[in-house]
Image (cartoon, rainbow, N blue to C red):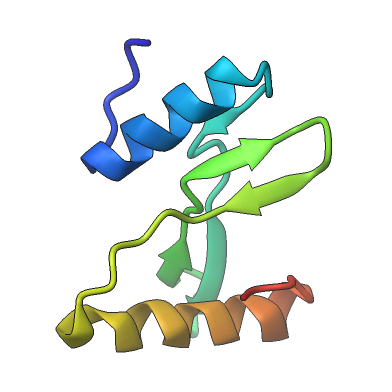
Length: 87
């Protein structure tokens, strides 16, 4: 596994998926959440994993109280813009 994971939790999740034979892709898509007046991306989200056999995106996150509001805000925008199920 030569993926440049951003956090050790992501590497651990990838190992777990591999151990169970679950195909995955690391950060394959970025979803624009907000565009400026000229159509440039101002804010976006890139889920950590995509599980192609079931069409599911997975975000691994550590609960840091000072940063969790940002993740929740992006999750709300993702749900509103793309109809994604985010929990």
